[in-house]
Length: 398
Image 1 (cartoon, one colour):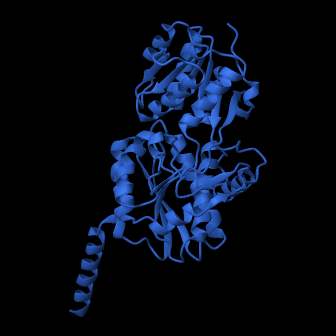
Image 2 (cartoon, helix red, strand yellow):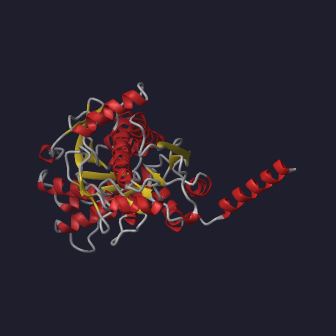
């Protein structure tokens, strides 16, 4: 009878704990559990898998060294297929069931839009998502949202600056091809602001083709640009690799003589593989240095993924996941002996100027929740993304 009473008491205690508001639940004191809702299937699966590989490589590296203050780290990764309707229940599960200390490395803007109100209501840190959208970069910042990467506005702004200043294009010769959602809008709005800085008049028409997320329906978007006068000499693309590759191939068949530039979320390796010979000369901006470079964090990253999963090929996406996780680990070393969600945010804000071997200055503080603002240009050559300088950019001859 006593055993039965003990069982009932334990069950009731567990039920009460699960019914508590997320902000009152305490993460495990035995291990540090982190969560991720990401695309492990669907058209963005390469990106989600890469982020997961990078984060897990950093955690495994830390665990081999004894963990953080004696506690091992574990990642719970749930598949959302890059669909907001699947991300929202994943977030509830991570926060309420798994009681994660933080969510790290989610992939995508549409899914971030679904995740944000849940993580903010649950007072759970939402760290280093694979998105450059502006709604994660408020001023002043949301307490529980911390970014690592440069924004899409910074990526497209860097493209516009180079096209005008280095390649000599006029603002009205630059067009856009974007995904019809918050991700595409973020890149387009950032690029449009940059065009205005370079003299595009208010109200001037800008070439803009669009396509629906998770489709390859790019024909109408290209038709919109082919009807534009003047025809674009450069197309800034904000989309996933498969539709962007389809657009570039179709545009070349239609004899559109233009530079094609893509933001980092496109998945550069997948884009290069999909395009084959048609990829030569396509620009992709990155928010981390080349994974084959000799900067310290790239060297440490390559070693970490070899030890964690030898068959895995290095990539920009997994390097970004690794860099974000290394930043988290640095903050955890400063947190209390039993890290809490609030304590983790305080620790991240206390980092100030810090260095993880990126070769660029990083900073986090109470008024600054984006660590990096650097954009690196690369160009597809012979099926691979190679590092370039913006000064290498030249317009396509008519």
